[in-house]
Length: 316
Image (cartoon, rainbow, N blue to C red; front, side, top):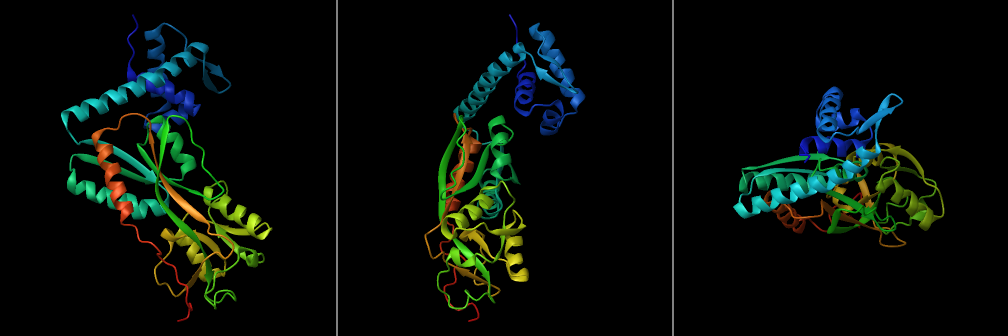
């Protein structure tokens, strides 16, 4: 009867998902040679060839693919067993690895980490700022435990199997103009269609925010926006508005309060909105993660509404 080492099975599972020994090594903090050696040991344990040469790299054999599929099931079962045992013992300890986009990290994750440090000193929390496109694969592989991300009206995110999505917060998006912009003076809602000739600042191409900006200009204005400036940092986008005369479309949570250097205006045509979602893996959660998620819900309830919205004279 073959006995399986879960650590080596994880390496095999990671190789199937990430594709190269180098990618597995980088993700798990090993050297490529160490990963290769451990997989060679796994081959001897099971008595089957799991890897074969493929150009300058390797690929899984049929036996490797078969075992990698079972590895995912076994790893999920081990994670569930650990969560159940921790819950039975009543211990709130362990590590929670969380990641999110910039505004969620600043306004939600950082306060949650501070709270858990005070209330659950045996819980180690790790936070990183990551876009959903990079975060979801890491969540599925178990490299992170919780992701906070966003989605916009008309641009739903994918819902990969094995993950649980829950709504945290919903907010409107606002047009941000330089105070010298002709449409900023009156304080009235501004039509996206009226910004056809403006230069835009948005997030990097391929992100949800970039797709939303382009899609909103196409659907409401009938034009392709001149997205000349790209940054995933909302503060950089705001500075581009202040210093270069660009315009932006940003969620309220990213906006400054009472800042006279920019004009924040409602979208005239429709109410464009963003939703923050929390994503975890299916299955039972360990007590540390349960405590983290409860603190996250409490923190979201404290988020301000109407932050940064200035409907009056930006020069007043």
